[in-house]
Length: 114
Image 1 (cartoon, rainbow, N blue to C red):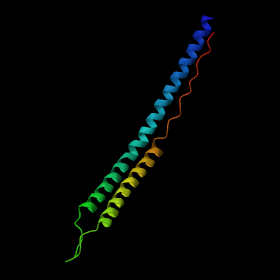
Image 2 (image 1 turned 135 degrees about the vertical axis):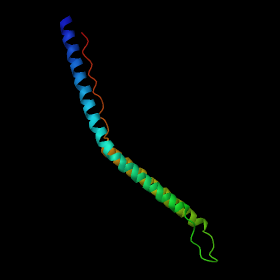
Image 3 (image 1 turned 90 degrees about the vertical axis):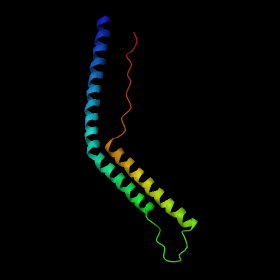
């Protein structure tokens, strides 16, 4: 009876060790892929921020005697900048989802009680 429990415990330990080794292997692969894509994502994000900042900071083009921007024009400009930010966030999220897939849920198998 005692040897059966020891055998079952040894099998559980070996299964746990193989699962841990598999997790380490897949983690190393995911980190390698993520580290390759990270500079592109950071560069793209910085480019979007730089473009949005340049657009926001440039002076309004007005000819002599032209009225200032209307409230509607300012609202449309703000909405466009917000849309650019949301689009950049969604693209970054999709890129990360492709590089780092969701982990599979753990399978818990409890030994039968004797």
